[in-house]
Length: 274
Image 1 (cartoon, rainbow, N blue to C red):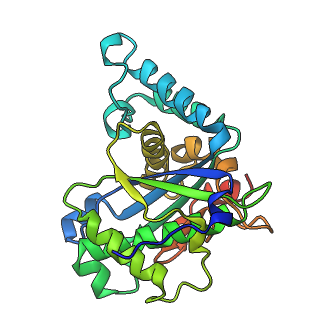
Image 2: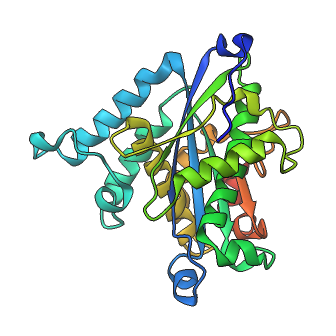
């Protein structure tokens, strides 16, 4: 894999810590599409000087879910395991904690499997599908770091490890993209410290990215006419990255497939204007 050295003037920029996790599965079988009609990746972006808010939020949520078992307070939290639908009050508490991280921003890339424009490559190969989704997410991370409020930043990206995924191959693919083998329309890749890293869930920020991804999953798993399923997503709506004009679609939320998968939901207008 080619090495990219961060130029000194970029290396001296303030750092932006980026944590990534995913929700849904990457399969395209009839069973997979029925059980998981979408796959999504979520990035939580926090400026280095506010990294303490990551530790406080993650530590607080671990204390919440492991309260009766203090020996478990270092055990990572997972949306699926600790924030189940039968515990709506716990989900609301988690969203409240996330929403109160004052300088955090969030980016979601959502792939709607049934409207993926019939791309056989993405449908045939889970690795290709994962790599392409990761690429679209990191493009937005790079642009966000370059245009961060108060001045450009250098993003340090950590992604949650995915079972049965070849992360070395993912790194090679992303490096080829960054090298210019695939046109990415002026993405400021130099604002990401290279290469991105894959880590386990012991990392506080990856745990919080998992919770953000779970909040999104709950909203997208509800009926399109249901406002309540997106209650927690709306709590965090102010953190979603937007363009200078305030646009959300394509920035804080990118859809692979038809945008109507999201934009025709009852809660979209409120989220769009959050």
